[in-house]
Image 1 (cartoon, helix red, strand yellow):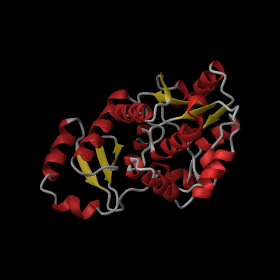
Image 2 (cartoon, rainbow, N blue to C red; image 1 turned 120 degrees about the horizontal axis):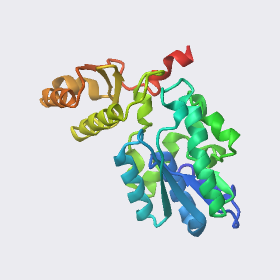
Image 3 (spheres, rainbow, N blue to C red; image 1 turned 180 degrees about the vertical axis):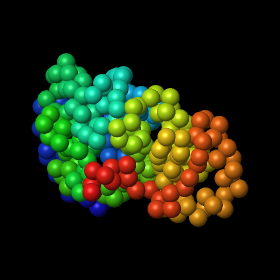
Image 4 (cartoon, helix red, strand yellow; image 1 turned 30 degrees about the vertical axis):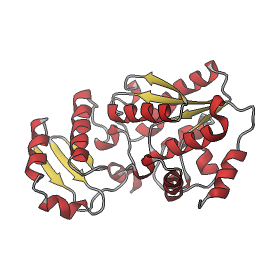
Length: 267
């Protein structure tokens, strides 16, 4: 397995006495971290998933299913939208991490766990991720980053382990679909959730539905743009999106760009 030495390095980051809480989103990175830890520290590893209005229910369901499949202790913590991000500020990610991880820290304390870990990897340090600052301040460990794992290496490792999640599209919370400084409404979040789930069912997994008032800007994964124009189901897709409250449906010809709503922060 490519990156096998990194697996050994990952294991060397922990001692036999460590008790670990993994902040588990159900995504590729945290799934790999949880699985790798389960291989050699199953009894001393916990998964904690935060359920908020801006996390799709299907992602929580997948997290539950994965933990059951590898027999890992799993806690769901349900929380409302933190008051300090209710208007989707530019530093939303930083404030959100501070708030949510404070609850994970309490869980860790209540269960005598000395390490809190997340799934950040080496590729994350080259992206715009203000939440990384909060993790540093809270002393949250990023073992995959410490071991030097990149996203492709994580996917390759999951594939070699025979885990279907290896090709799951990257995902981010639903707040990334909305412009900064716009009031967050749960009705809008559910609209985005339903739209993206429908697109996935129609063969466009990983498509982002960015909302600009009553306009939806669809960002497709590579290879999907041409297909979308020629898809007999295109009218059905447009009709469904309009039926759930979207007035105009547009296709972004640049395709999917991670963090495209953050462009003004990068300028």
